[in-house]
Image 1 (cartoon, rainbow, N blue to C red):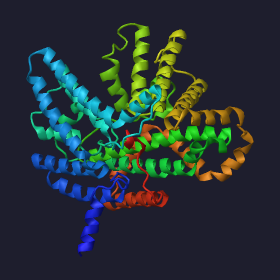
Image 2 (cartoon, rainbow, N blue to C red; image 1 turned 60 degrees about the vertical axis):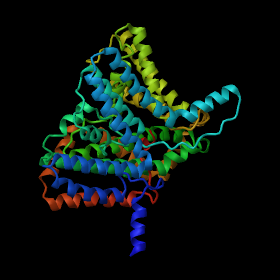
Image 3 (tube, one colour; image 1 turned 135 degrees about the horizontal axis):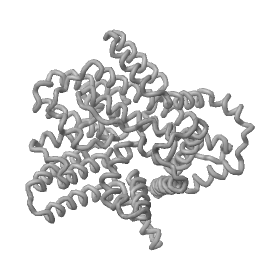
Image 4 (cartoon, rainbow, N blue to C red; image 1 turned 90 degrees about the horizontal axis):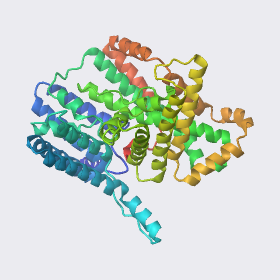
Length: 492
């Protein structure tokens, strides 16, 4: 009996090799227990908040161990700082405290994410040796730091009032669904919902379950499968594959990244909605975009709007002339790339997207194209293909370990394309290519069809809903690999 208890406690303790993620059995077991208790506390706000905070802190502990203390510390620090800024009359003092918040958050990011990179770069310049420090990166630190900054800045701007109850703010910053990989939920979105009625309607519950099931399928059935079955092999050694296979891998990684990241967002949004909290969509079918500008209006919406509101506009936005607007756009996208991690490859990827956005604006101005123009069907198709291609090229830098890796892929594409292997490729990777094709077809499905599916699902009885959910889980289990595949954006 003691041994069994010790095994259970060991399983519940932090293990960096076994984090508790949305796609793990442990999460579903513990969430089911949590949800059953949560429903009994719907009319008891304080107890509900405390219970959810405790579960959220445990959820974070299972992913980052004792780094949970950092999360709790930031929560308390922000609460006190927000109250202080709001009560101050001196504008200069308020601005100084905002600077303190930004310095602390960016300081944490610099240490945990960029310290080794900065030291290595400096060591290379000075031609000296540097041994990387073993620094543990707290999961989701970029996400909760950005939420922290936006809360304090919004108080300074007068957009929101600070929380009068510390539990409300701790709940906001630690709330587990978006904690590890977004969306970057803002205080003005979540805080007003805390004291509202948290009994989801029938259609909201159906929507929540639909999002959770879609997220699971996107992550496990699509992203993990095509990654392990083809994409990782090509990116690990591009020279072993033809140019055609390298092109398909580049397109495939774009699909993989979308399904992996939007899969997490879907599950986070669905779980939050099941608990009575509504978040805005983080993705809006970005692969149907006809331009880089439209793509970034549809991709990782919570981050792109955050960068717009707290970086691009403060830099001057488009208020100081066209040249300055283009420079601000380049700075914003390059820093957005750096936000993803301590690698020059992310910086290059961010700069590439900045170039695409600036080039698109110049192109539209030269040809007098407005956003209200409706292209013909052929031009529409070509716009989508070109945009997808430009983005896939950029994601080669995002995925590759080095410029040498990208160079090898491009060399294979331009010098060893070999289209004649297409039939062998289709035969050898039938299931992977089929799933890629199905994913793209579903991606182009009109929103009204999804809404119709949600409505009909909401009309089913409890048994039918349970059978559908069980079927989805069965498919996920059958397709999933024996090793846990973390969500890509957990490292950011």
